[in-house]
Image (cartoon, rainbow, N blue to C red; front, side, top):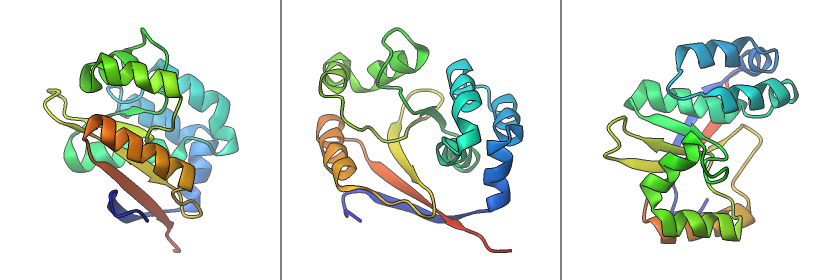
Length: 163
């Protein structure tokens, strides 16, 4: 792992949690419990992609960050879709120049932009499942994000908890 990125974890996760997310039970529960994190765009994405297992670790990371720090998260695709709530917050944090650069270069951005509810602090989190790791192209893109924003990027690694 690149030493420029700070580690959060390892954090335990169970297969049962992932299955409940894929079945719709867990993401629906989280979207109801955390309406300041998960918006209609997130819910629609979960409806379409959760059955294949996508977005579980990103959503879990957002819940963990909220429960441990009180910080809210923009989950995935916040750098795109100008005019959306997420992109508006992203632009507010990074500034118009950096936001426009993000659109121009179409680089990977970390899964979460995590921020204090009063907007006084923010940083990035990349969530990785038990069988996933930071790829070279991601690390290169994250180096660029770090240079552009000066904000830390944390890696939240989940590990399978064996009961």
